[in-house]
Image (cartoon, rainbow, N blue to C red):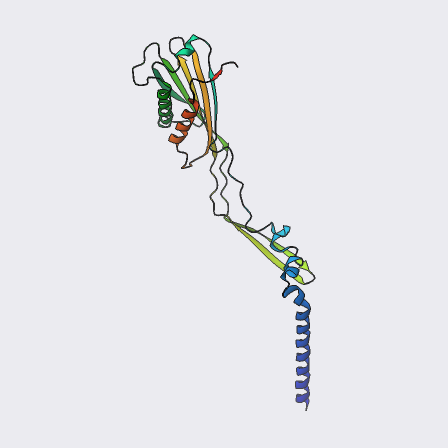
Length: 246
């Protein structure tokens, strides 16, 4: 008899517990059922776009390309006097030296010398004949300086976490950002100074410089291309230039 009463009591408790669970599920239905916006939207503070989550997981990690990359700037000046009429005529010799900043070796400078020689030929000079006493000297100086240092190595995976609480309970969210791009190398400015000197008098007839900013080690900007770009920009419209002292 006692065994039968115990079984009946256990059955009643189980039924009551089941009813309680069903009631709890029904009360939670408005937040978790068909109206997801009411649960994860207003209930959890806006979902994945919540400020706690740091924005969508697809937010960009880095800024856009530096506007200085690949841009060439040029300044040119010419002396005043009868000697200026000799610009673009006669024989010339080309020499170079390393300027400020990192040392530019001879083989590297040779690329800039070759680019300048091509530009001088286009300007009307004779670069093949042996220079005479009345010729001109073209002096080059190549300089480099770092405009922006290389980016530090970083983890390709980053993220943020947040926890929200509402009348429906609590929830934990995780946003993950994956950036597989490589850190940018240093942004380097290359400057080519050119000076044309009358060999007989030693007077500077024409001078100018051109600069360009490129990424260190960028395959799109080898030294040959940089040299050609700067030389072409310098001698564009030669001997056009601003008067010295203007």
